[in-house]
Image (cartoon, rainbow, N blue to C red; front, side):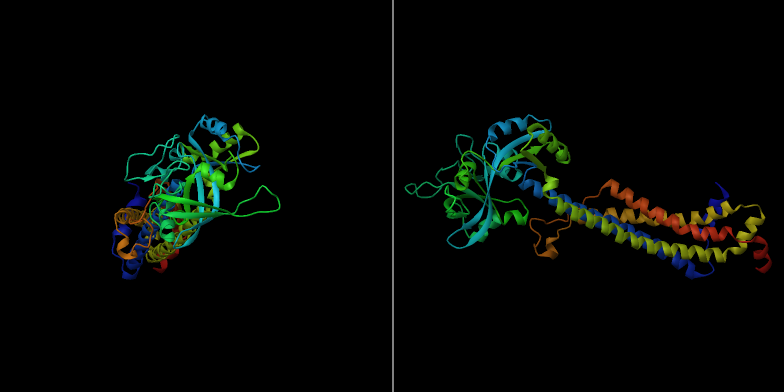
Length: 428
């Protein structure tokens, strides 16, 4: 063992004449421990909520959306087959967006209605995996416990003698707002256009509620509904055309590259947007918030390192005579610096790994803690704190802490190296 580490260890273990120095040393180490623990827990929770939100958003929408600059997409059958042949694409399905208002006997609510193809939509949209969708011939699944979405124009009302109505599947919260249950009749009122350029009138069409779904994201479950794509085309009066094509890919983080491949394959006027572009503002805000929290909590560690610097300065003052003797015996300035840098780094390393251990332990506890005990269930479909502990985040936290601790030791170590051995021994 080099003598610098031996002497540094003796200084750490020795009882100081002034108990105040020892107290500051332990407080500085405790400050680093708390700062690292808070960083790991807060960053893990924020990343966990971000991942949970991402999965819920992608459960209700596709990974890539293709639209046309000209408006409607007419030759969508050919385009769907062409897109599915692109490397990395798992499935594709056409859709039509209908903006309108849904009205029941009890209430009225704005909604975003999406026309889908039951034969292919379930392979693209996760929330529809819990919905028994009919095949191309309109055959309904036999599982009565699952939501059913009949084919266009199929009968869902209770009375077999009344007029046949098309089916609609409502989001759970939207159904509660409208006060409806399965097989109830609701009306869709949508801005329409007449073939005449002079007169424009809204479109009103009745639907029978065939079931409900939930995505786990309140904003979606409060406003979304699905109808058959043929019924959407009738409401929009767009013939055999659709709003666009939704695509599901194998790797969500390759969505940008695959969107570029789709653009290159289809060419103008078609344009593909990935889920990161469609939700850019939301995820950018969350990423920025996580970075800001990292900086703010790092300041806690910075304050703790000031205590390390203070305790080292007082240690240098108290050990001036010892430093002078070491220099008289041949110790270099570099060796003196190394002694006090070693002292400060030991405190930083111990505090860092204590904070790491406590942070991982607390994160694991939060993963299994039922937050509904003190939230009263206000978090929609969340009963556990979503914590995502990332290895790269932990490495960044440890590296940042140790760098700050190292910088805090430089000034006291430099001051120790400047001690004049002759003057120190003469006046001590």
